[in-house]
Amino acid sequence: MLAAACTRGAPPLPPGELLATDYRLGHRLRDGGLPSAREVRKARVVIVGGGIGGLSAAWRLQRAGMADIELLELEASPGGNARWGESAVCAYPWGAHYVPLPTQEARATRWLLSDLGVLLGDPDAAEPRYEERALVHAPQERHYRHGTWSEGLVGLEGRTQQEKDEWQRFQARMQQLRNARGRDGRRAFAIPLEHSTQDPELLALDRITFEAWLRREGFVSEPVHWMANYACRDDYGCDYRQASAWAGVHYFACRSGVARHAEQDSVLTWPEGNGWLVRRLMERAAFTMTPGALVFRIEERPRHVRIEAWLAREQRSIAIEAEHVVWAAPFAFAAHALAGTALAEPMRAYQYTPWVTANLTLSELPHERHGAPLSWDNVLHEAASLGYIVATHQSVAVQPGATVLTWYLPLAHESPSAARQRLLATGREHWAGMALAELSRPHPEIRSITRRVDVMAHGHAMVLPHPGLVWGAARQRINAHRGRLHFAHADASGLSLFEEANDRGVAAAETILAAMGSRQPSLRYERG
Image 1 (cartoon, rainbow, N blue to C red):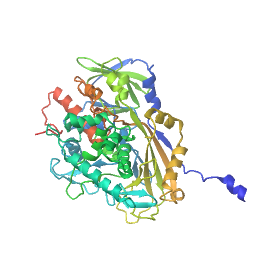
Image 2: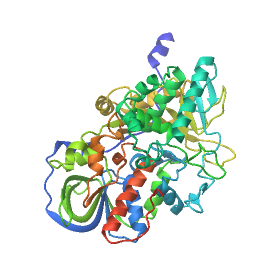
Image 3: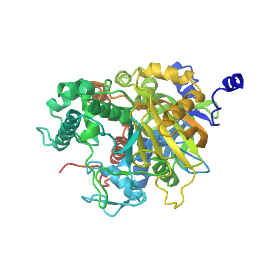
Image 4: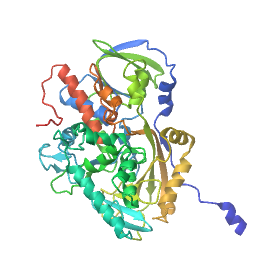
């Protein structure tokens, strides 16, 4: 009997799929050799990339009455990092899963949310009202450490007085930077970031790592360093020894959005995360979207932009001559399409962090044993992952039953290129097993109640804000470009954040509208 038990081994993994971005199609851009186009057609505006930046550009153009828009998307469906999935239980996110309360500077985001019925009343109000179902329900977040759940992102139970004192000093320092202004009168850290101060003393933080800045400031305790690293892994998918200090501080100091009837740290969320916004934008779409389209050549001419694209579904290349082109895909792809131009070199400065996301379908909610109750965001302290969110958290069901947990793993402990190689070589079973192993610590029963584990591999999920990127020469050279080719991806900011992508998309659209003679008032923030 003992021998038989030994041979049985671990129970089989629940079924599921391994999904991934279309890296094979993307690698064709890297490897070259795509056939030249034999068909040429005309268009007014072409948008390359159907993430938040591209969809925001399309939304703004449509809002101004423009109908002649074509969107080319590499993947089978739009959304970028805001893609989502659905099951018989509920919808769930594959990536971005919330929008913080928009600041006054994030005016374009407020107007978008207003158009979609999320923000109620005046988008420019000092304290806007938001649709109650979109505001995250309590409890919002908890932290698992040493076998116990505690409220909030950081658990201070069992910490020494010295650690607690340093944590309070860190909080005070971040509040000071949140309120700080540069010598030009602008906020030290704003979102969108282009509204931040240009004070050289503060921009110098972009030249060192976040970890180095913390030590320079005298922060040495584990809670502070853990939280700083968590912040970089959460927003940028990288270690705090890879991110610039400016980007690291920005995480803590840029958020000042408020709302009527909501706490300042509240967020807007939906079962499918930011996929809810993508879904609503696509329901309103009056443009043509072509999936499986790889743009491999761009030539900007005086009267139009000529692009060539490989259509994977049709196995042929086409050329489009457009009055304006909005590039809303990662800049690393643009570097290949713009090979031989002055823009290609600065775009090669961009690196991207890979992610793994797993959605676990459970027959019932996880069992709770110690400390704070199940929350929307459940953070694991002693884990490689960030933890998990609960897709059914916004449900108003009286009798909770089956649910979906979305588990997030940034591959932040090695170089992005090494992590991508590992991602390509690793199957679903490894990641599904890792998710179940991590979650079994707070929830020993997790394997017995998990019915399915689907995994998504994101090879180029987020731009890495390494020292020198956000305020360095490469990004400035790209953003200084003027012509018929416009850049709308969050890469134009150097931070993969919703507000940045949205604002860049709206900015590109409004530049096109102005070039076409439109005199509509801007939806973007303008300093008084």
